[in-house]
Image 1 (cartoon, rainbow, N blue to C red):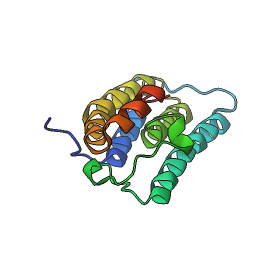
Image 2: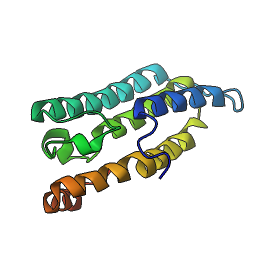
Image 3: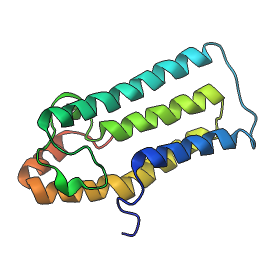
Length: 150
């Protein structure tokens, strides 16, 4: 497909953060007690997923570059990858959720699902095709035992 691996996921995340903030122009932002604390906690969870995913890739000495999954040399299945097949993308979703809560942008919540659909279609599915080509049955077994998101 045309958009497969064309836009780096961090850039897509930044675009969606901008959309979340932009959405506050069209719907009243909401505030509630501990909003800042809750959004910070969710942000840290998201950053944690991303950090531990990257750390596992580095430990396996495989590529972290989401634009070139064919360069992978190892299949990550341990650590955070035993909970989700896509910890970095899940972390990005947590960052978007934290942004929505922090800004009180409830229109940001549907944007998270649009982000997930985009990342699934144009990033995850092409990556998984590459993983199947590279690792065959080992990837199929892993895919059957660990969820795509959570």
